[in-house]
Length: 245
Image 1: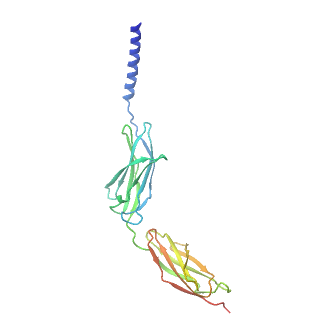
Image 2: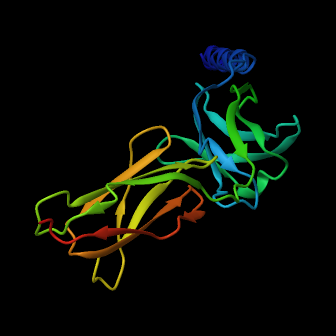
Image 3: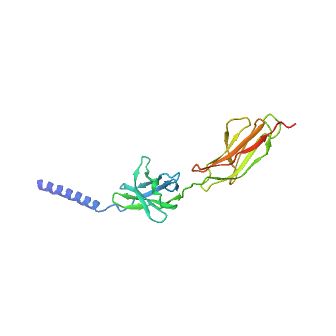
């Protein structure tokens, strides 16, 4: 009886070992799936430029056997690999890394980022390239042209007639316009006041001001690009005449 029991136990052990061997002999050959790859910002000034910041790369990945690691690779416009960075899994399910702003030092143009994923059997998947447009340093202030105002003379707030002046100007900058302001000093006022000018056409900005006492109204236009380079116009003067008879 003991011999029969021993044979049964031996058969069970051999069967179990053969099953484990068969399982172990069938490795995972399916690569992970990489998706939701993104970069931010997608436009980046070169190293040393105003506005140059680290670029966030993020992605998600899945695999039946688990995801071992993700890595981001940066390629310069000349095709050279500028660096690789291991990504960390965040609480929101994204793998993330911030490429340092100093990485964008070679030249302006289209830089490329892609993500590579490994599972625990070292199967790999590589995402498609994402583009980061790297621009040269903008060191030029906006251009203000065609400054006009109508009418050339207004009446005080307590008179009948036109009490407001409409100021218009064309403003342009290669990097875009952040804001345009109209600064003015009312007659008899000591300090200056400011209003934002509205963008009403391709290059055009405008603002209306009025209801002043009699005297001289002074004003100028001030424009900012995204890097806070600033342009001012010359100080202009408009007469706020007395009440018409």
